[in-house]
Length: 206
Length: 206
DNA sequence: CCAAAAGTGTTGGCTCTACACCCATGA
DNA sequence: TCATGGGTGTAGAGCCAACACTTTTGG
Image 1 (tube, rainbow over the protein chains, first blue to last red):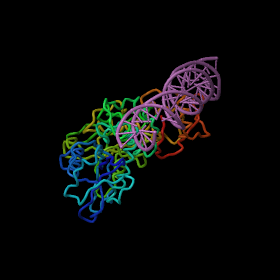
Image 2: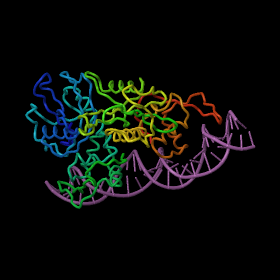
Image 3: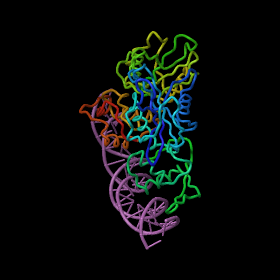
Image 4: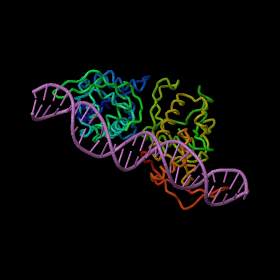
């Protein structure tokens, strides 16, 4: 399950299934683990195959094993969540799928199998991890303004955030590094920030 | 992976493997999912087979799929954690295992496969869940004194707890119901408590 | 000079922590 | 009456939430 921010919205990448009874339905990309392969490696390989992405934050979520979840056979799926900073980096679906595209997580189309359940699970995890880790680093570009950072939080947590209190807390926490440069635009220039660490660290946050 | 409190210590139930190259090593009980079986059902069935337990809190933890974790074959294991209030309720190991017993989690014997990793993972999860849910209900009998409740927390969190502050917070939270009865002993009788809910609920706690 | 987004402080209430003594009972 | 564990209150500090105006720039 791949997520990214696009047009200031939280979006998920879905593929359209090409054949079989689920033909035409949308779903998260996935595939089979190979014999002798690590689960994480299999997840990375499938992600690369369906989107072209080679580097991204990847995390095991949950394992779904209801025998009726796939009408074909008893399939056990180990769900992974991947996060990327730029939805545009996705190459497009592999030949395996009829189409691929980004959908707002609050308005996903009907999904095949039990993927709606998976999506709910993933989004819940993302939300809670945002509150006690620096996981946002995986969803933002290397360098960003504080406003972008703040909006990410308000979008994922689905609640308004007090700018002043939020800024104070985050900066006191040392989560971000302030850069010397600013971003110039049609209005007052904004200071640029980067994450102090580009790897996951747990923190007491909100 | 089964955990319980015994003699005021946090303990895990281990079985001794009977045959094969891992003969004599201790491990968590486990087994194969049957075709057409739900994962949770399989976990319950294996728990029942190795301990006789039919009811207990059960939660999926994580899926371990390193192909080298089992020298025999590429086995993917979906780890579950079970919690019970009374270590004495375990019937003893099934014929499948040579022996079974309870071990303090801080002093486990060397474990087969990657089970030490699993144990660390489970204990970490238990610790953190204790802080933001009422999961303790699964580790305590129906009725208990506040001292027992408090000791559970200090044992699992591995830190001392201020009795007065802790009591105030927990009671204010409405997590417990105070019963009319008291437990009489060689000293001042202790008020008895029960959980307000006997099912998992998430709460902002500590 | 206007529009738009960036940036900044203070106060009151509340919560948390630190801390030590009295109580009830059985032996 | 003594030993043992059960039960309770308060004050000071720190934290958090609420709240609106000024600054900087480009057009």
